[in-house]
Image (cartoon, rainbow, N blue to C red; front, side, top):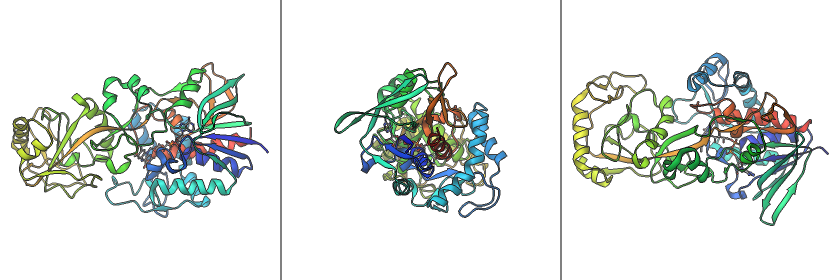
Length: 456
Ligand SMILES: Cc1cc2nc3c(=O)[nH]c(=O)nc-3n(C[C@H](O)[C@H](O)[C@H](O)COP(=O)(O)OP(=O)(O)OC[C@H]3O[C@@H](n4cnc5c(N)ncnc54)[C@H](O)[C@@H]3O)c2cc1C
């Protein structure tokens, strides 16, 4: 029987494995994580972005191809592979239907999830349930899953993958197949590589997802002349609670309270307009903004008027009845914090506070104004959170075409190698991010890669 090896254990790998097994192939899936920690970053997700012309089960209204495409062009500033971007968007509805047919369930969007009920389909029970279901579907189709199998090298000879070198708990092993799918994510968990890309600041980054995305397969391929796409220093990062674990903090550590307060650096000074635009359009810049501050630290301060307006972090806010007390608890220079808040409050122009529009509550006359949702910080108790950059994933990847086929720098494609997911996201996402696109890219190319690999 035609044998396909899939590298990775996240959404892209599982879609590829299910797709190849549905074509009748004998599929082996190599996942570097142990069973308990399987599922890569996909286990932390909640939704995927889907184009649709009519209301659809859990998706309301419509989201046209043109609007989706336009949204993508905006975030990438037009720097995307237009053919692949079109293919992903056009196939997103198919992907949704295919997942449902295979037995994956969706639910209505959660409250406080960045107003995505029209554009994003939410996985029932979140990414962990999705992954568990996908493993079950794959195994029911006969896919053999091998955990604790980390691919170290992909050996390429004469435009073909000849074998894989894999470390296992029983030592190094060689695996061979007719065709291969790589879906092993980015390199965001590899701290040495992050240091190379981002320098000293990266030491203070927290990794929001799995520690198993070490970029070993990516490195092996790039070392052998595979065409790279995307930039090493591009990726997705958000501001997370500074108390989050080094890895796998997941969605619950993200802090969405920035637009409701002010954010101070370690010197107690504001450094960016906290109300520049709707939070879904701005949350992804705050990782970088905090990363650019000294010691990569930020401090968000809100008062009791705003406390119930955002999804809470898994950690309790730091709280005090006075601003002095709060500044002290946040280890900030008290005098400067009081000055900054006094100055901010003095420049607030009262308006009609409304989270649903770019309202007229703003500051006027400050060096850095807050342009919307600006309200005086004057109602105790006061709350603070410490922010750190939380890296979600990296964009450097490998070049593919619409058949998920992988290319060498010399322009030749590999006969039996296909790729999907984060490792190819840089073809479409050169910069910026559109919530839910990561899982759509993984699913669309996973399906294609699996089918192609099964038919080499
Ligand atoms: C907290 C968080 C929330 C997110 N929320 C969303 C969301 O709601 N919607 C969305 O679209 N995107 C979201 N993302 C991004 C999303 O997780 C990724 O776009 C998506 O999971 C990529 O899928 P993937 O299968 O390519 O990678 P992953 O799911 O990361 O899977 C990679 C797999 O490869 C395995 N692996 C790595 N190296 C090797 C190796 N050498 N050998 C064998 N196996 C290897 C890993 O163990 C892992 O199983 C989120 C990310 C995070 C961290």
